[in-house]
Image 1 (cartoon, helix red, strand yellow):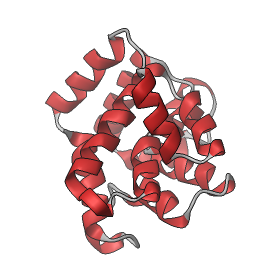
Image 2: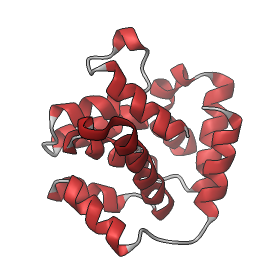
Image 3: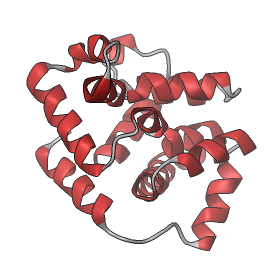
Image 4: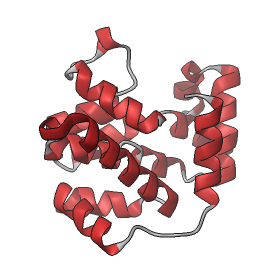
Length: 171
């Protein structure tokens, strides 16, 4: 992620607004009932962001943007809810990960307090995939949430699907 992307996400997280009715109906058509509950548990700004990501994935992939792929786009950040961090805590977590390295996330998530919450936030892809797997999401949805930012040679999912999600998230 570039600094510009992070600044845009921060400013967007401060903006008021909700997902409009037509968009909400579209989201509901892409998610199972349980996935919809998880999506609604995300903060308003994350829901708006995930909708934009899903629409970009749909435009990029066309007919290959199947329900499991769009569900992954809508839920790629659902693991962030595990941290319980607000906007400013997320900024702190992002900066902490950049300074100390994301490899610290596992150790931090085994501690207490804000350090634990930062560790959980930095592991949001893994935690989100685990949440989806436990709730019975399709394997492709789970794998895309977990692996979309992994290196090409470590992914189990088709690279072009993961690349489309990653590019849509970074836009």
